Length: 97
Image (cartoon, rainbow, N blue to C red; front, side, top):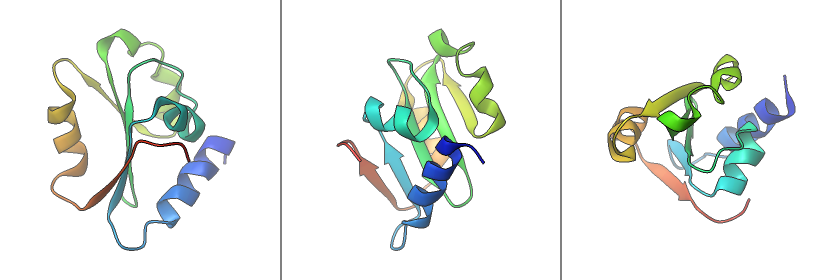
């Protein structure tokens, strides 16, 4: 298990009273996944972890597909976010971990 996978696993394990963690701070996104783009969010739950970014990073995120789901948003994040969380209770993390 990679360092980023371990970090994601610890973050998900800490979810005791909610279903998912939504990470919008790019520093935290990078810390948890290794993704270095300038646009992206992570939705992590016990069932799925997904990185949502836009089409400019389609090639850059290919290596990450081995360890997490990636959704390329062609329009607005809200559509991809809704597919990722699907009505579950989620914590929104925008500050530093």
